[in-house]
Image 1 (spheres, rainbow, N blue to C red):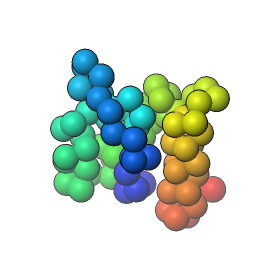
Image 2 (cartoon, one colour):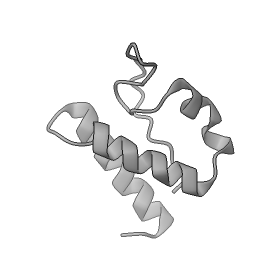
Image 3 (cartoon, one colour):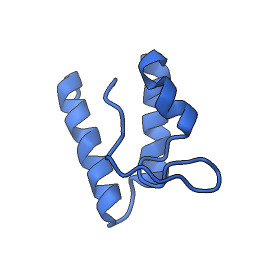
Length: 75
């Protein structure tokens, strides 16, 4: 899946991880150059760390993931 997990709420914590999507600055900058395998690994990690729970960003992240799956033909 090549759709990035950005939900347009970029705010980084002290560990340089986006509080909304869970990616590092480097992962965000390199996204277009990453392999599909690397992108999938990031998605898996991001959903586990930032995509759970009832918060608005977590819900937005899960919705974005579902849309990306549909576009990729994986239901």
